[in-house]
Length: 254
Image 1 (cartoon, rainbow, N blue to C red):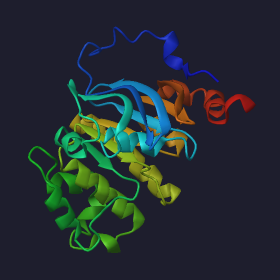
Image 2: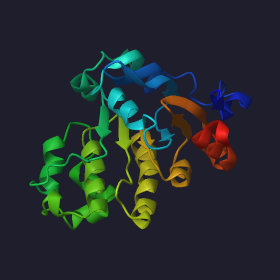
Image 3: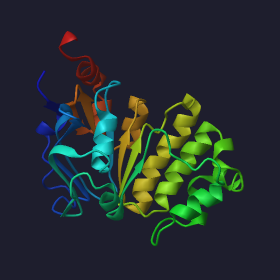
Image 4: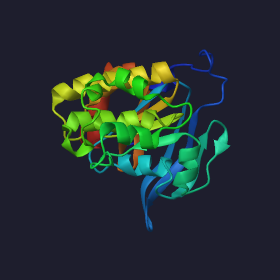
């Protein structure tokens, strides 16, 4: 099935701020492991304060895409550009210095350290303050002296995102925010993604399995199937066309 886009019928060239340099520009990105290309020819450009939902079935290549954007995996083709600066291939420290911060699906917390210590050790100039992090995630304020390993799954995810925010991200990559969490917790957490983009002006790229909830907080969305972009467009338009999403997920069998 050929790639589809809902943006084909809309002219975004006159949108406010469209002439600005994108915060994150992903150009013909291909990635994988060894000789195997898992992700092929992914393109998107995101302006400040925007949220991109990356959707798709398990094994489609979404986490590979995120790890490659973060520099943890070397690109097999294409370019990753942050605020006009082309990042060197496979350099996670460089990507991090340019404000590209990954929240991995395993959260990667220091479980023997307290909430305060996890935040303090990551703090950078210009990033969210400790008080700002608590304001964003009030539940952490009540657990500030508790070791991260003793937190609930939802609290750990809050801490992982808060730790990223204190690093002053320009691009925040959140891989599977809802991993292992009850649906009621997911419903509380995902709207915070919208708040983060609105209040910090960062770009957020969100990999998420809760499709409709993700589309509610995103500006743009793309569906990756077998490593390629099957469908892309404004999130609200995709939300109005569930049959297109179903077809994108299931392919020609639909």
